[in-house]
Amino acid sequence: MNSVTIPGPVATADLAAYVERVGAAARTAARTLARATTAAKDDGLRRAAAELRAHTATILAANARDVVAARQHGHDSAFVDRLTMTATSIEAMAAGVEAVAALPDPVGEISGMRYVPSGIQVGRMRVPLGVIGIIYESRPNVTADAAALCLKSGNAAILRGGSEAFETNSAIARCLTDAMRAALLPDNAIQLIASTDRAAVGHLIADERHVDVIVPRGGKSLIERIAREARVPVIKHLDGVCHVYVDASADAEMAIRIADNAKTQRYSPCNTMETLLVHADIAERVLPPLAGIYVAKRVEMRGDERARALVPEMKAATEDDWYAEYLAPIIAIRIVDSLDDAIAHIAHYGSQHTDAIVTNSHHAAQRFLREVDSASVMVNASTRFADGFEYGLGAEIGISTNKLHARGPVGLEGLTSQKWIVLGSGQIRER
Image 1 (cartoon, rainbow, N blue to C red):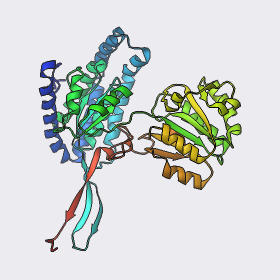
Image 2 (image 1 turned 45 degrees about the horizontal axis):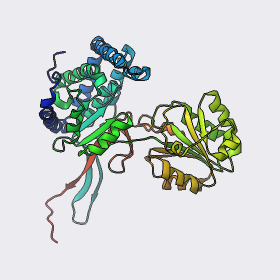
Image 3 (image 1 turned 45 degrees about the vertical axis):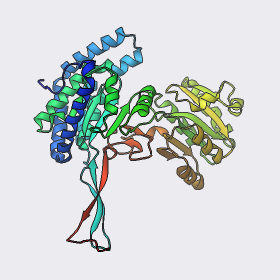
């Protein structure tokens, strides 16, 4: 791999100028990518997948150095596990890049064309956002995943991975930039920030001249910092305090199955249920058998007084529990007296991520869909479906709880915008 697009570590004194150069190069590349054909972008992605496979040994060697350093710095086993790559995970990463190549290209799509009284045609065209900065932590596969999504949607990507994965990310990024060159796409379509200095993040998220959007992928502290300091628009979510509400009219067996899956299918994703709300009229039929499942799976239950009366082994919930994103085998449980109470609880304690109702009432379902102000709202389904792949997007760059531009799982379409286009035949405005 002979790419020269990723320099060695950058000195702190030169950091601001360096990040600005990266941004300027990305802006130039973005203009070229905006007019790139689908065939050219797909060729670049397929070449990237081939490069990743061809340089598996190089990536694994770089990753081994990162893993050794992480252990020396005292990171726990879960952290090291997220950081560690294998030949299998590199193959999965390459296959993921190929999967993005197979997705429909949203760029250039025209919709809503119509004639207006003046005789002109008015509609919208889908276009790239431009330059996207992705700031992420220990998972090196994000380097390829995010770059692939940006490229397919016609955007230049500036990647700033965590310092703990710097060697691995650099090896992966070299494969991607070599592929861009081979596909006759701009070298700087994909750039990795060559610094582990946290100040680089500050420079990147303030570069309004060159960067159009920032996408943070990581823990709450990282996202809070970016949301607080960024001058560039941010697509993000802070918490996944997701709820399942079991309505009085719910089928008890369905409710138990959904509440089990929403909590225990996986504990760490942001779309895992953290709080279960159960209507008082159905609580006796749902909570005891569900608690038996949770006990068998070693899920710690923390409930209000009425829930604990039905399940004595449940611990007492505190006020903090209703706000908690546990990302662990812990669940908060509350009994409510009405749909109104459930909606009010979600509005007060929720994070506008994903919330579900289990009900046989069409009226209750429609009210829940209209009134719960979250990025994903579900009826009779597990919150674990709040995912780009499950929604048919093919892939996602993250989840957004923003209300402007992109909301929910952000796939290729979420990395584009729409501009108005007008087609005329010589019309002029008379009044």
